[in-house]
Amino acid sequence: MSIDSSSRIAERLAEWIAQAAPGARLPSTRALVAEHGASPVTVQKALRALAAQGLIESRPGVGTFVRAVRTARPVDYGWQTAALGSPQSRIPALSTALRDAPNDVIALHSGYPDRELLPERLVRAALARAARREAALTRAPAAGLSELQSWFATELGASMPPAGAVPPTAGDVIVLPGSQSGLSSIFRALVADGRPLLLESPTYWGAILAAAQTGVRVVPVPSGPDGPDPDELARAFDETGARVFYAQPNYANPTGAQWSSALAGQVVEVVRSRGAFLVEDDWARDFGIDTVAQPVAARDDAGHVVYIRSLTKSVSPALRIAAVVARGPARDRILADRGAESMYVSPVLQAAALDVVTQPAWRTHLRGLREQLRARRDLLVASVREQIPEAHVERVPRGGLNLWIRLPDVTDLERLVRDCEAAGVLIAAGTEWFPAESAGAYIRLSYAGPDPGAYPRGAAAIGEALARQST
Ligand SMILES: Cc1ncc(COP(=O)(O)O)c(C=O)c1O
Image 1 (tube, rainbow, N blue to C red):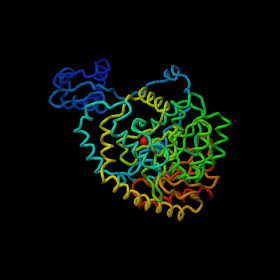
Image 2: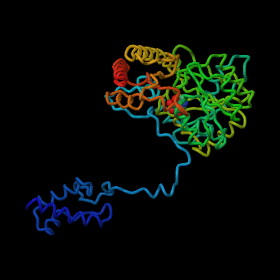
Image 3: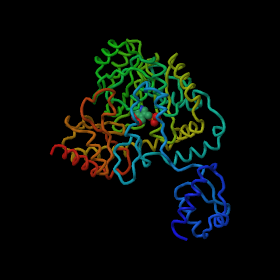
Image 4: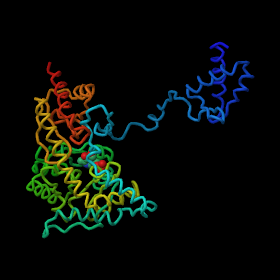
């Protein structure tokens, strides 16, 4: 039989398949041989061609069947745009910090710590124990497991001076599946739709995303290597009538700023005097290097500071557990929003996270982590200073996971990011961290990714890509 015969049989069978239901059984090879007057070899060849096109699948010993999932064909979803209309708010695309990286690149872009920085053995043991507990088969209370609520409350209370503010109680804590969704809930609950929300500029891209998603009006407050200017903040409150200011007083992402005690006091005073809230995102609580994170919430017991703290990055990105500590009606409104959003957080994850942070080995892990981050940060700073003469590190961060680097204003950031990627180095353009226009050309480099030994090479590639822009 010729090649044409097998193609002809394949064509005839494809027509039959197009009419057949997914999963329908094809006639046996013997029947096809008889039907087409062809040899078994020719029929097999036709069947192989159809399988390669994804039209059929053969199950050895059972038969050949029409595939349930047909091969991809272009589908027109244009009707959906007509049905949905224009998007209500411009939600920015997902950040570079969430991009997956192949193994062979130098990944300086990511927001999440590499595995070697995680308490891997503690996490695995905690998950195994959690799987054997009641938590594996029951639902959790809406605000979280009471023991975990207590742990978060006690941790924040421990930062308060003995004769200072009244510490929070377990009842002030709402456990969250990571702090990102908490930000959306807080903005929804405390800032009404279309009302102003003050954000440091630059600030965490996820907060900008949450603000866009919840439809609040973003008002940037400039913030530099030492944090925001309290007079600017006061002016922004007065001019806009805003009642909420989102900020990161410790090791801000991206600037690395840690507020001085004086600034923390001034900001709390501004917020108090305006009858407003400070939403304090203590994302890097476990990532102090030269200093220890000092929550501003430790200065307040009148419900002005809504405190959010995540274990996602320090315990494991696979255990997405965080908490918000809020008092009064603000707490009730945030809890109501969480209930509508996700009802409760998986108790298995809560139990495992609590298990990790209550092991004595957790403290030992954090001490080791501090030294690892210090070595990584110092190596990256040295590499940048050596290899990128045009780079200006505005602040060597005293904690956190990132370096915020200013480049010459004329830098074409998009081109720089592209050229670095072509050279096998992933970096993040600073533009993503500005709620409005960028205050300059910045890049953010993480010193928490894999393979710190590659920092000098990574910095050299950035330096070369930058040098090419001035030739
Ligand atoms: C400042 C800040 N807040 C919140 C988050 C989100 O944390 P989670 O992973 O707990 O949602 C991040 C993550 O990058 C962050 O940098």
